Amino acid sequence: MKKILGYSVIAFAIGSQFTTAINADENYLYEELSPINEEGLLPLNDDQTEVYNAIVSQSMRICKNQRVPKGWVITGEASGASCSGRFPNMWIIKKPSTSDSICKISPFPDGYVITAESSSASCPHQFPNVWKIKKPRQSESICKVSKLPKNYIITSESSSASCPHQFPNVWKIKTPRNTDTMCSISPLPEGYVITGRGSSASCPGRFPNTTKIKKL
Image (tube, rainbow, N blue to C red; front, side, top):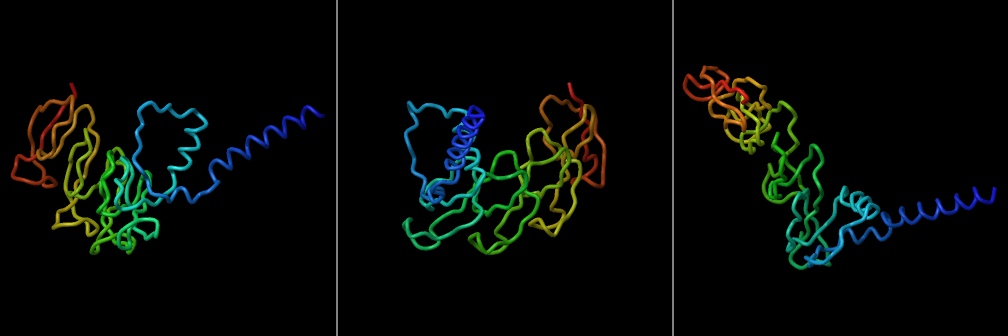
């Protein structure tokens, strides 16, 4: 009985320390980020990595005179007396989720596409001032203003009031099969060759405006 009680006390102490590591002094999340010299620093151990991942899943605030860390996005702006400059003088930043909304002024994360635009009083500049972004599925509809993800093909165009610019302003994209057909305006994906031409009213440009492709 004493041994079981002893193990319980140890487990409780470890759990309390881990909870404290995540929750203690949450205000430090909102302190400005300062560049550091990482030369000679040791990598995080497993426990530290777990705590770090729990922290970075949340949003934080940084002074606007700081560079936004790579892979993070701006979701709003705020004000803080700890930062210099006129209010609002802080960015609200986070690691993007599978689908998210970011300020148009934000750095754009790798591997994401733009699916719509919208407006938010939390972001600067005139409306619409927000991009709706997501990691593309096997097939997706994206605004033409979006960068085409690597090794996706364009299969047609369409229109949406949620995307900017004149109609048609949307690309229908997909990951290609072993043999497939794409709009001729689409870049050729890696590892594929052209086997023929065709025509489709769903693709832009004069006929023939489609390309038949095959995986090597």
